[in-house]
Every structure is written in C-alpha cells, then in structure tokens.
Length: 436
Ligand SMILES: Cc1cc2nc3c(=O)[nH]c(=O)nc-3n(C[C@H](O)[C@H](O)[C@H](O)COP(=O)(O)O)c2cc1C
Image 1 (cartoon, rainbow, N blue to C red):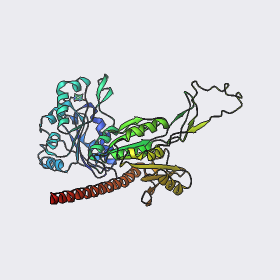
Image 2 (spheres, helix red, strand yellow):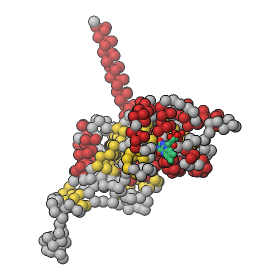
Image 3 (cartoon, rainbow, N blue to C red):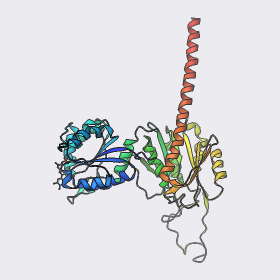
C-alpha cells in the first residue's frame, strides 16, 4: 500500500504565481488516497480560489483563522495534531520568513507552529528573491530545525526571465511528500541498491542491441524503498523515466557498466534488487564507424553476421563474491516466456539468491512496458507466492514486505548471536574471577 494511502496531510498554499500548480498537487495527492486539508493564505486567494481546492480535496478548505464562528480557530489545533505532514507549496519568501521566525499570524503559520508533524517546504519565487541572503538564511534556519526543503528548479519564471525559483513538477513534490512521510518506515537506516531498465550493447556508434524493458518496475521498487525510509541507489540502464525524488541515480547503459556499478554500490549495502533486464550477449567487437550496407561482405543482398559474446553474469559474480558483501540480501528477477516455475527455482538456487521475482512477460498486463505485473515470488526457504495481477507499485510493496521480513529475521539472528557471545564472555569472566 502506498505511503499516501490514508495519510493526513495539510497542504499550505501561499501567494505566489505558482499557486495554480498546487491544484494539480492536491488532486494527485487525493487520487493517491491521502486526506488533504488545504490552507490558503489571504494572498494565495488573490491567485486561486478555495472552491477549486475544496472540490479537488473533497474537504473543507481553511482560509481565515479569525472567521467569526470560531470553527477555524478550533480546527487549527486539531489539524496540527492530526497532520502527519505539513507541505507548503508554493512557499513564498514571506511565508518562509514567518515560518523561520516562529510567527503565527494566519491559519497556515499557526498550524505549522502547533504541529509536531514534519514540515516540507517548496520555495517558489523570482531568482533574486530566492538568492537574497535573508531568504537563504531563513531556509538554512528551517533546514537546521528539521524542515525538508524541496529545491526549486531552474527554468522560465513568470517574469519571463530564466533562472532558479520555479516550483518543481507535481511528481517531484509528490516524491518529496512520500519520502518524508515514510522516513521512519521499515527500511529506515538501510541502504538498498536497485537496478532497472534494459541495457544497450553497441554494434557501432549508432546501433545497439537492446530489449523492451521500460524500467517501470525497477523505478517503482526504488520509490517504494525510499517511501519506507531507505537510502536508495538506483542503477539505471536505458530508460526514459525521470529520476525519482530523493533517490541517487547511477546511469549504467551496458551490461559491463551495470556490473561495475552494482559492485561499487553494494559495498556496505543491505539489499540488492536486480530488476534490470541485462543483455546476456554483446557484440564481440564494436565497429568504430557506422557499418555501411555496401561495406558488409557480400554487398547489399547479403545479411550482416554479428558475432556475440557473453556479458558478465552480475548475480552469478555477486554470488561468487558473497564474502565481500556480508549480510547483503540479494533479489533477482526472472523474466520468462515459458516454464516460469522451473526458471524461477533454478535461478534461486544457482545464483544463491534470497528471493526471485518471476514473471511471464508474454502474458497481457505483465512485464515490459505494462503498468501492471503478475509475478510469483520464490523464497530461499522454499515458500512460493503467486501474486495476482497488480500495479507495479503494488508489486514493489510486496517485494519490500518480503525483504523487510528477511532483514528483521537477520536482525533477530544477530541479536541472538551477540547475546550468546556476551553470555560466553560473561561466564568466562565469572570463571576468571573465581580463579583469581
Ligand atoms: C503577481 C504577483 C506574483 C507574486 N509571486 C510571488 C512568488 O512567486 N513568490 C513569492 O515569494 N512572492 C510572490 N509575490 C509576493 C507575495 O504575494 C507577497 O510577498 C505576499 O505578501 C505573500 O503572502 P503570503 O506569504 O502570506 O501568501 C507575488 C506578488 C504578486 C503581486
């Protein structure tokens, strides 16, 4: 289940030109299952109306702490207590200054001061306002106190100027909200490495051998890990997908580059999920110049023969080098078009994996390019779980449920061993004290 499902959020919208973009944000948060209480500053209402947000969030919108019925006055403390996250997007320089200095002269700043929930701030303003030492000092102060600042982006501003200060895209703001909400999840303090996408093996400077992997499943796995508090390194092959917020991306377009990136990233990591579709074969030689039709032996009529060699078997090499990566949980994927069970089980044992996620990529609604997947999980301990067809984001959650259970098991074993060792040590010192 997504971290946003059922989450209680206060979204504060302030009086900047990007306020209209907050409508999309509130819509997407609500669609993701969050309960969003929107608070508009007085100046925000010069740009957008409460009715827009009330309709999108399907909840009352708060604008005036001082309205005479006293409902808002009472609700602001309740909202502060109920909120799991307060997200201010866009945040004006003015509201940032008020938040930094503990001012509470409207509904939004009063809630921000009264809540124990984490605060996420997305500044959006003209470049000079953002760069001003006052704004920068205020942001630094808020960061120091634990607020999460979503960096504004460079681009075209409402003034027509190009520069820093743009409100990031909705997807980025959603990512930040999800990351902060999940910061204390069951992967908190863990470092996980996820590979995603297909590889491209060069034939010549313009051609390659590739595959149909979109990277969607792997990216969803990376996002889901982030949403459970993990530090995530995402090793991406060929994919069009944007880097998820808060995830460290390493581009590795070929099988060899991916092998090297995996070995480098896994030092000290807790989990490796190899969901990339890595080429098994690569051209024996890469032509330095574009191969011309006429230059191929036999001329135009004859085909081109490519000799291929094996690429590194990344999970096989990781298995052989297991001593270098103590405690690393290794998860492999098996994308098959037939005999899924045999292939999944065979991969599990041959590569010494903890979990294999197998899917029949020839089935509709499964595998490459699709938004959904139907997978079977093969556990090291012999358990097999056939999952129904579900969104790739949901498959990602199931994988992390399984891995979190393994990490907890490792933790229990470690504690047992540590206490057994301490017990032995204890009895030795008891014996020693008896003898001396
Ligand atoms: C047309 C217009 C656009 C503005 N855009 C921004 C903006 O993008 N960012 C910002 O920090 N202030 C912007 N301001 C200034 C704020 O509206 C002003 O500082 C206001 O006091 C903010 O109030 P609030 O923080 O309570 O919403 C803009 C003002 C106007 C008139």
